[in-house]
Amino acid sequence: MLMTLVKALLFVFVVAGLIYGVEVLLSTGGELRIAVANVEFTLGPLQALIAFVLLLVAVWLFLKLLGLLLAVLKFLWGDETAITRYFNRNRERRGYKALSEALTALAEGEGTEAVARATRAQKLLRRPDLTNLIRAQAAEMSGDRTQAANAYKLLLDDDRTRFVGVRGLLKQKLAEGDTETALKLAEKAFMLKPRNAETSETLLQLQARKENWAGARKTLGAKLKHGQIPRDLHKRRDAVLALADAQAQIAAGHAEDAYDEAIEAVRLSPELVPAAVMGARAYLALGKPKNAAKAIRTAWSKEPHPDLAAVFAEIVPDETPEQRVKRFGNLVRLAPSHPETKMLQAELEIAAENFPAARRALGNLMETRPTARVMTLMAAIERGEGTDDSTVKAWLAKALTAPRGPQWICDNCGHVHADWLAICENCNAFDTLSWREASTSAAMTGSAAAMLPLIVGSPDNGPSAAAPTPVVVDHPLRDADSEPAPTGAAAAK
Image (cartoon, rainbow, N blue to C red):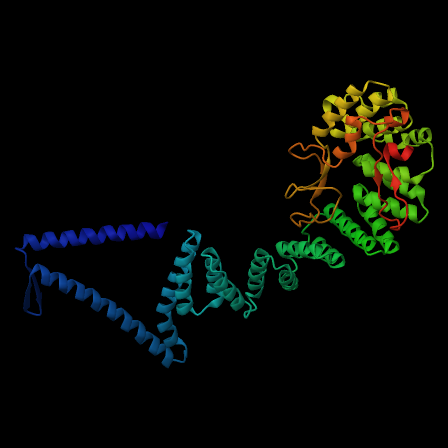
C-alpha cells in the first residue's frame, strides 16, 4: 500500500516537472540556453527533450558502471562471487517478477498465461522448487494433464519438494480412477509425511476399498498417534475395520477365524449395531449366550434395530411365543418409547395371537410413523381379529406406497443398502452408512410381492393367516448348509 502511494506521488511529480519545463521553454521564446565554462548552448524544444532523455540514459549507465566497478573491487578484495551476483541480480529481479505474474494469473484462473509466466520464471531463476509446482497447477487448470504430470515428476528429484510431487501425482491418479497406482503413491506420501492428515485419510480410504483391513487399522492407529482423529472416532472406525475383516473371513469360509474380530468389534464400539449383531452370534457359536444377550441389550439401549431383535431370538430358538414375549421384556424395557420397540412388541404379540395387545403395542405409530412395516402389522392384526378382507386389503394397499422407514443409507451419496457394509457400494466411501430414513420417501419394493397374495385373497383364511409373511434372517456365523434362524413373529412360530 505504501509503495503504491509512493509510485503515484512520483508519477505526479514527474508530470508536474514536465509541465514546468514546457512552461519555461515557452516563457523563454521556445529555446533553452545552457552555459557551461563560458560556452553557451542554445537548444530548441525538441533538442531539449532529446538532451533530457540522453541525460537520463547517461545517469542510468553511470549507476550501472558504478555497480560493476564496485563488484570488481569486491572481487579483487577476495569476494569470488561478487561479479556473478552483480550479473544475476537483474536476472533474478526479472525472474521474480515473472513468478509473481504467474501466481497472479493462477489466482485469476488464467491457466495458459500462468504456464507461460512460470516457464519464463524457470528460465530466469533456475529454481524448479519454486516454479514446477506453479507450472503443474497451472497446467491442470488449463486441462493439460500430461504437462502437469511431468511437472510433478520433476518435483520428485528434490528432497524439499518430493512430497508435493507425490501428492500431486496421487490426486491425478485418483481423478483417473487408477486406484492401484494411487494406493502405492499414498503409501509413499504417508512414509514421507505421516503427520499429514489428508494423505493418511486418503491412504485409509484406499486400503479399505482394497479390503486391506490390517493395513487400514495400522493407518488408523497412526492417525490417532498424531492427533488427527479423536479417540472415540478411532474406536468406532477400528471396530468397523475389525467387523469388515470378520465379514471377509466369513465370506472366505473361515467363520471360526472371524469370532475374535467380531468380539473385538463389540469391545471397541458396543453401540455399533452391526458389531453387536455379529459379536453376539460369535458368542453364541462359542457357547456364551449370556455374553450374546449382554451385547444385544447394550446396543439396543443406544439404537433399537430389527437385526438386534433377530439375534436376541436366536439365543433361545425353541421357546414358545408366550415365553418369547416374557423373555423379550428385558429388551423392551430398555427403550419402551422407541418405534422399533413398539413394532417388536406388536410382532411378538401377533405371533402369540394376542391381537388386542399387539394393537396397544403399536399405539399411535399409524399417525406418527406410518411406515410400510406398521401398515403390514395393522393388516395382520385386523386379519387376526376377524375383520373383513376389504379392511385388510386396504391396510396392505397403503403399505405398498408407504415409506420404508429407517434403512442403511450412505451419508456421502445417499445410496440405500439392503445390509450394512463398511464400504458404500455406490461411492466407495468408508464408514458412511447410518440407520435412518431416506430424505425422500420410497415405496416398498422387496415386500410388495410377498404381500400380493394377501391383497388378492388367500385360500387359507384361518387364524394362522393372521401373522405376516415369515421373514428369515441368515445367520452370518453359521455354516452355509445350516438352517437360518427366524426373527420376529416368524421366530415365535
